[in-house]
Image 1 (cartoon, rainbow, N blue to C red):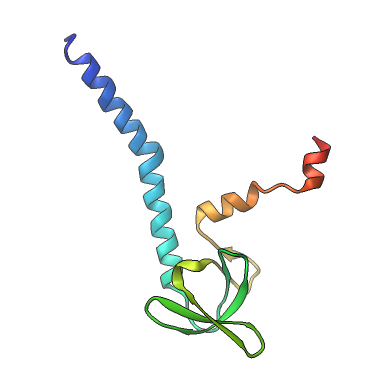
Image 2: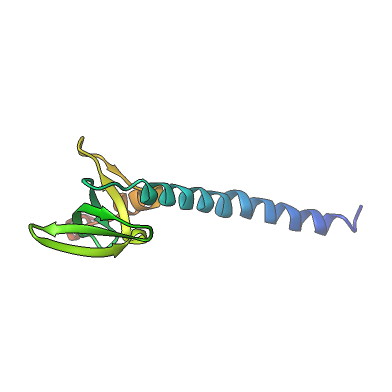
Length: 112
């Protein structure tokens, strides 16, 4: 039994690592891929750089955005951070939403 105890600790650590880190990361990656593959012309999207635009055309790996009247930009699908729906809610992957919730302003920092 003493020979098995260290092996059980290693197995337990690997299992916890998988449950807490690898599994949620894979789930977030699937959500990101689903949002990016469901983009259609006419939708408003936000790029990971913060640029808003309306999708004009889609291709396999790229989309064309209209960022201002008459100004079209061709970007990679992977650059899309979220899709802005008409009801005012963003369809964003969980990690992007969590990062937006955790941002603080200078006023928040000064109050502390």
